[in-house]
View 1: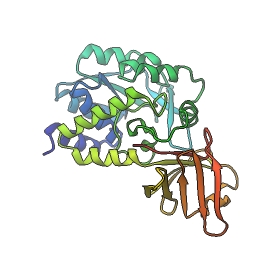
View 2 (view 1 turned 90 degrees about the horizontal axis):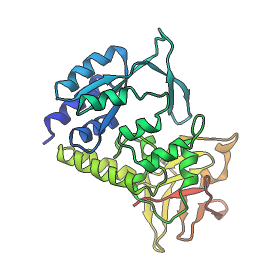
View 3 (view 1 turned 90 degrees about the vertical axis):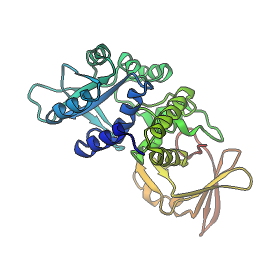
View 4 (view 1 turned 30 degrees about the horizontal axis):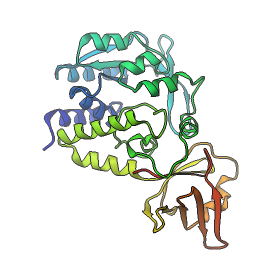
Length: 300
């Protein structure tokens, strides 16, 4: 049976969509002591209702002194924030939620357009991931940074699969970019939040999230691809079908849609890292896996 708190938060999400399902997971983790503080970005008209709802459950809220607005967005839908000028109709309230008032106020006073290193630690992000973020300059390209920082390997732990957030709100963990796809602390957070969900009667949510995070991701021609069907091969490799795959454009170049890789019936990653495209017209095409493009990420 779903806990009363989980029902309340899911109803809050339905009424105020800015409180995302990822936020629901984070607030449950906050209540259960897995996360120290939660950051919400709200329209000003929703602040009062969200604040009163959470404070009625014994949580403390504090709003950052400045309103924020989106100053840059990516093709993947990521928005990066900066302080908004007075009277900006699109300004958002940054509301910090914690189990103690002092923790909420401390986070609210540590505001930045991008999440600053000190704020990242207050929100419970791993030190290694905060340090990796601190090394970034300008508007980060987190997809490239994550791929470059992660050595090619046969399999990665599903708990660090940040790409899953691009395809579904059902995901485990907190809303930050891990330092690599092997980050053990990120994996620990994912497993802890899975337990939180199960304890609150949301086992089906947790199972759906884990299934999505276990799905392989292909990076082909600037497109992130999550196949609808994949399987392990007899030689310990992984194969998938591109037909019916879910795709997200990242850095799609001119003419990419005409690339012959898209006519492949099956794509296979061999244990040695070779990617094999099975083409019905010309047979088999093999390429070496790259650091960024031609990347076949397998999670388990």
